[in-house]
Image 1: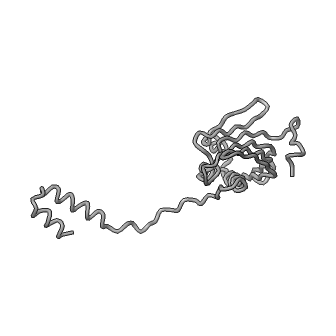
Image 2: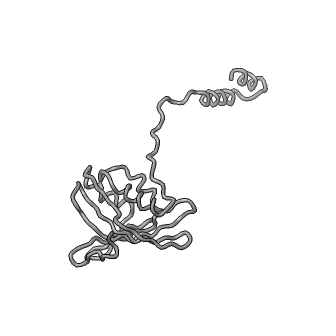
Length: 178
């Protein structure tokens, strides 16, 4: 580096550039910090629809306030998450859903797809899945998910999920149960 600075000074380069160039060379040769950043959480693959269903269960399940990076990766931008109840649909963003679930703090949420069927054409798929959800080990709900997914050539991503929980008047039909 010293030779480079002398050479620049001898060739008539202004001193401010020589000093600036020397600083840049010095900055580039410094050793990187010893602490390495934490590796991002490895998310389950979603190359197949079976993997997508497993990844959805994995992303939902766990402490209610867990890191939701993998949950976010499953969805395309502007995804719509729509629970349907007695008063009709309620459209949620990913952030809305995360905020609502996180209110349960560290209580463990578990979602498990009991059965699903799919129809695909090209890069689009529709999955009709029956789910069961528990909160802190207690049954919370069973219901049906209607999941629309898009394949980018390598992985499946969700573009929309509409779901309705079973209740006294709307029982899950036998054809959707295992």
